[in-house]
Length: 292
Image (tube, rainbow, N blue to C red; front, side, top):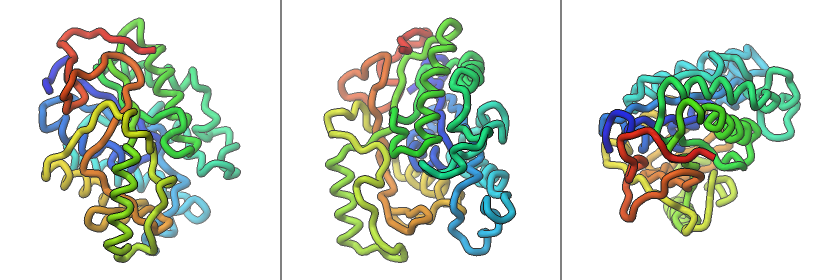
């Protein structure tokens, strides 16, 4: 992995905390290798459910102050990962968290779910043209698990890449995923070990991006230091995530694995060479590649 044109990555996520859960190891590994990491977050996560009782007043149905608080959590998480370039799409608060699928918040005019994809994509295209990433990382078309903002983030990320192509063509587009065999094995381990302070263990359907093993194009295995940085970053998102050992839970209290390895599907662009271990493997130093 190198710095320069072949070592620039752009990650596009829906809410603060998504970046640490999905890509904490990858971001820490890129930073350690001298690559340039840019994170774009599409909303402030205003509609999230708050775990600590002492912070319950921040919720949307009370003080409606969760968004700015989560922005602070995100800044702390990125310090743990060593990431220094972060932007909110269109500026902080341009689009609001849409809530879960079917919630009335989906229909607010300001909801990200209702954002014009061309407008939001154009805002992202400006970031792409500025930072010139070789690799783009985002969600699959289902947003990993069907959340409206994650689905919209996928659409906006792919649209932004297309709109930016005349000025900068991204060499490789990756979607977050997790191999089904590993997910099943780790959930079984969590059940065997017991839920600890959590109220139970999540079902496979709750784990984002589960795919057949053969669909995985790359596995990024973290070092002990990178896994520790990821765990610390997740812990920084204290309103949303409760971390314990090799697992974590969201507001539902159901344990999921804290992944020490992160996996990716190749959505577009340059295939990985055999034995690839990082997101830039096989990319030369010159801008190029395919974005479709």
